Structures are given as structure tokens and as C-alpha cells.
Amino acid sequence: MARVSQAHLDARRRQILEGAARCFARNGFHATSMQDVLKEADLSAGAVYRYFSGKEELIGAIAAEVLEGLRAAFAEEAEERPLQPPDVVVGRVFTRMMDRGPVSEFGGRTGFPRLMIQVWTETLRNPELAALTREGFLRVRAAWVRIVRQYQREGLMRDDLPAEHVAQTMIALAQGFAAQQAVFGETPVENLQDGLRALMSMGGPGPVAAEGGRGSGSTP
Image 1 (cartoon, rainbow, N blue to C red):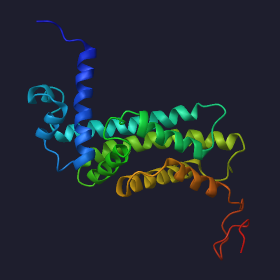
Image 2: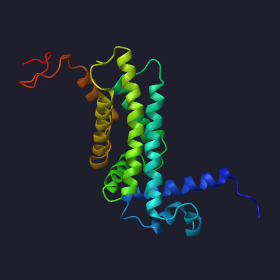
Image 3: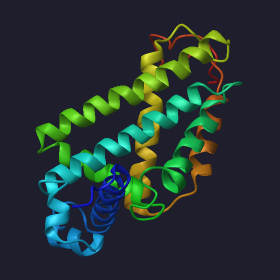
């Protein structure tokens, strides 16, 4: 019997993941059956079950790949010199994930955010997926922390605030934008970038006042 090459095995696994992800992006995890996946991937049950034991394992594999794609994209941005401002970094990563990233085949430009939302929802009932997602989130946050600390070293961002807090906030902005994409349809990434630029343009280097809730640089 001829030996199957690793390249062939990798290509087949990719075929299954792409077929499953298209189904999930289109119909959701719970409305998608393994029969749907087999039909979408155009493979037999034996071919698919050789790689994945079932739908839960497919969901975990897709979630891991999405998170790794995000981590790699932000890590690549952290190595960029000169380091680009946050609006450029977030815009480029979003565009990469929607157009050219590891999930670009998973349902078009809105496939990526639709999958993200479903993964987050699934973590509420699946402890194993929740643990995997948390691990992936921590890796993404670590990449953002590197970017923020570089901003601080270069004097581009105030350094009296924890880089971890800034990183969490930037991730929250990206997550919120992904939720809008998934629920309300495709929105230009430039809208997110414009919003970030507006927020970045606000003054007020001082701390928030104990009374009145205004920073020292705020206008009344």
C-alpha cells in the first residue's frame, strides 16, 4: 500500500476544517450536523472521522486556529519597525483575518466574526472549549502587551498605566467590533480605525478627578 504523504494528510485536514467552518458560519454550531460537514467537505464519514472524533473536536480545532491566527497577526505587528499606531495595527489585523488569514475561507468577510461570536457563546456550556479559549486569549493579550510596552518605551503612550490594562481594552474594542460585524453585517474596518483615532486624539494626561469624573485635560 502506498504511503500517504504528510502534505496529503495536512491538505485533507484543511479540507475538513474549511467545510466545517463554512457550515458553522452559515448555520451555527448546534444547527450543523456531522452529515452537513461531510456534504460540505465532499468527503466520506470514514475520511472525516480519521481526523476528528466529532463536532466538538472540530469546534475546538477551529477555535484554536482562529485564536492562533490572531496571536500571530499581533505578534507580527509587534515586530514592525517603526511600530504603527493602534488604529493601524487593529485595522491591519482585522483585514488580515477577514481577507487572508487562516479563516478567510470559512464564510467570506463576515465568516470570521460569526465564528468568533459562536465560539464565545459555546464556551459558556463547554468547559474544555472555555479553557482553550482562555489560553488563546492570554496569548493574544501577551502580544498586545508587547506592543503597548513598545509604545511606552518610545514615548508614544503614557507609561503610568499598566500595559495589561491597555491591552485588555484594545482587545475589547476589537471584540465589540467583531460582534457588530456578526450581528449587523459587514462594516468597513475604517469605521473602527476612525473611532480609535478620535479616542486617541483626546487630551487629558492627568488622572481622573476624584470628584466630577473629569481628567485634568478635559474641557467642561
